[in-house]
Image (cartoon, rainbow, N blue to C red):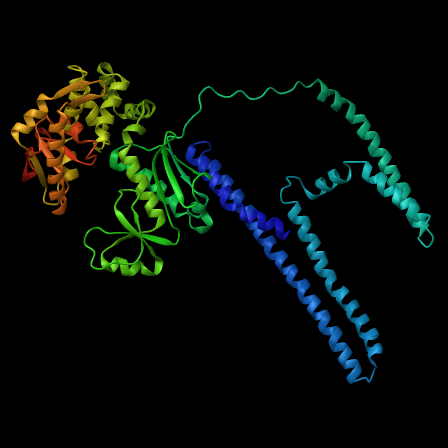
Length: 548
């Protein structure tokens, strides 16, 4: 019983993780997941009680043996010292009495152990106790034949009560004969059916092998992060991430499937989008990641590493150094927060890949219930794929698509004129001008921006090249290198001042500036003049021009 309980309790994290993985992948509903968790909890509670009962029985046996030894030694001492018995008499008297007392005292423990074993072995049964006993005692006739044979043999041995054993042997023989006839009557049809039954063909593999939209794979050393007995803080955070992402970028992220991957190192995790790895990191449970934001007062001892979400230099520190690191100015995060931050950043960075046509159709179907005119109007002029490309263009530059109605109204206005995707993206951005400005302005509604030298801006506009993937700036290699070097110096300067790098240029140059800097500066914000609303102040931090 104790072994069964221990194996069941040890398998609990894996079972819980399997239920969560099926729920996150959408294989089961929330009600089914709740039912399975409740069943699992009842099973764990039962086996936990049995584990305690088994330990109680084990302790009872050990104490009984100890008491038996004490009785034996104490009895011999009392008999020899107080009653004047010799050693042989004392041993014969008190050992016999002690063994008899021990057998009587251990009889209740034997009953409890037997009852515990019966209950535990029946834990997986769906029927009643009577039904199980009837099935098990009437399943095979061979057992009764063996029992009848031994009883008859024992009856003829001298000294054995033949008047009891012989009738019992005959009774068992009758039971064996009766069950044998039933088995013979039932077996032929079953055998014929088994022969007539055709072999099942192997299951055909589907021509489409589905991929999880987003999956989080964990090494086996990180399973405690999703173990509910140990808090399962990561599961709650992932649920919050989906809600916060929907409010932040306007895209409802599909359920994130969490699975264990034995090919990963025990402390590693991997984030995949549609089966392709997009992020990876390593954690140390029990330690904290200490990130230097640039204003640290004193150094803290730790092992150098890098923040997996942003690639910043960091340290692994022990729990006892956490308060010291926070007082010194470090940003200290625990392992669940590291994965949650990395996952949030991955979702925002790859939101355009997550938004497919099926997801877009679900958005339009939901909007059509309240805004049927808007949806019908935009679908008259633009196809589902063209709307998807516009929304993906917004998400690539981290522009929220939560105001979907305003986006669709703008597309309906300009979609009747042109189907040029870059042009439509610019017009939608201008329709969302207030939202974009508020996203980057400070509390005083001030945008601190860099501008481009007119000659450089015109050079970028003149290099415009239209490709299947959109507009790109076809600058010469040496000009492009000078442009990136000048931009790098400007970005470094503005970051040292504690500001976010933003470039302000004309509407014609904005997509070209963005495409030419996306590889080297993926987080660079590029705004056009029509995107600036009147109530936002502008503060120029400088002008970027080609060096040399």
